[in-house]
Amino acid sequence: MRILLVKCVSLKKDVPQYAHPLGLMYLVSYLRNRYPEHNQQILDLTYTKNPMEVLERRIQDFDPHLVGISAMTSEADNLHEVAKIVKQADAAKTTVAGGPYGTSSPELAIADPNIDVLVLGEGEETYADIVSSLSSGGDGKGIPGSLWRDNGDVIRGDERKPIVDLDEIPFPAWDMVDMDAYQNLGRAGNVKRNRYMGIFTSRGCPYQCSYCHRVFPKRFRPRSAKNILDELQVLVDRYDIRDVEVYDDVFNYDMDRAKAVCRGIIERNLNLKISFPHGVRGDRLDQELTGLLAQAGTTNIGIAVDTASPVRQRELGRNLNIKKVRQAIEWADYEGITTFGYFMLGFPGETEEEMNETIRFAENSRLMFASFFIVTPFPSTPLWEQTVARTNPDATNLDALNVFSGFYNLSALSGPRLRRMQRLAYWRFYRGRLFRILRSFHRFRVDWRNAAWIGLTRMFDRKTLSDVHGC
Image (cartoon, rainbow, N blue to C red):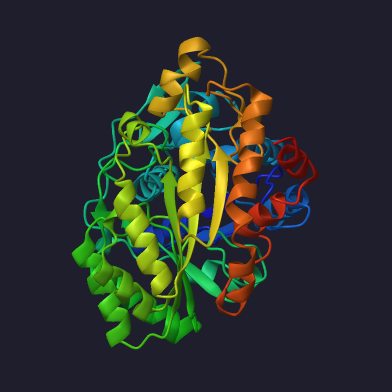
């Protein structure tokens, strides 16, 4: 079979951040390992000029039997557009959708008649079984871990158990992407433009945050330290990769494993620059691990605090120890690691004083950069069920499901007042850091196009200055 795997694009992003399509690269390598006879290609539309025209040409030239489409929730509109273009080219082509959007909003995704099968959650085994079915004359339906339509009814297959031993999954198909094409694009890891590769060292997170996607089961599944180090060794030796971004949900949940990975990088003398855009839990960073991360080459760490209110932390199921987070930020700063803080304003019923508590924490911390997002309830999360679904179960608004440009107001404040609090948060955080940022500019590995720099410029926004003057 000829198979085209498409990574969708969001045309509404306020912050141009890109990453290699690791999910699709894992699908390719897993299928290669089981059924190497199939011809697979990846088309990443996220950085492609005129993406729909490129898609049409690729479909015409490659003539795939199956088109797999992966999308984040913010890319949902594009997923349906891609599926429509595929079916217009040839209705006999099989379309298989997957990714966070399909997993969190399965009924909405499968309602599209241009989508034949929907993969739920972790995709490697389900994808391989669908391809096996199609290549044997089947229709790809009835596979565990998938959803499909049958005579107008939506049928859900048996639940697919997650892969227990992640070391059994082959390394991503790096040869399927042009690594050089990504080096000049904005990056999630907030680092400067150069050749790099992202990795996952684990899957899943055991914490029960009410606002978090449930793409993977709520349990921590780690790769072994040796398996991770072997992957890094291949990236260094074969592809001359020296910059690495780690995309885990919670890299340091098992602190002994995290320390073993760091020690291995040091012992193998891999000479890496490592960035954690997210996935480092602040209250699970001790002084030893922070020092090892620095020795291993860590330059940037993103720490999600979300809210500084202990009451909110308990209500939201995050249960972050705020005092330990503050200490971890100080350790990282002492080691020369640039820290990025991520905060959210506008939780259900949140008052202005609670928001000020969060802003004060950010102001008084040793964080170098910070972003303040408006809380966005995503479908299939407890937060969605507790808020939007209770009042209007048919209220899914794909335009609003974007943390950069969407807007839901769940707080006790009016919409304009909530936006004003967000602008003031940026002003209050950055006004006392300008000299510190400029003084330390030489050691930053930060791209001007990422959220951190954009946040810095927001303090000079006309509306922000007007808000400040009004205070």
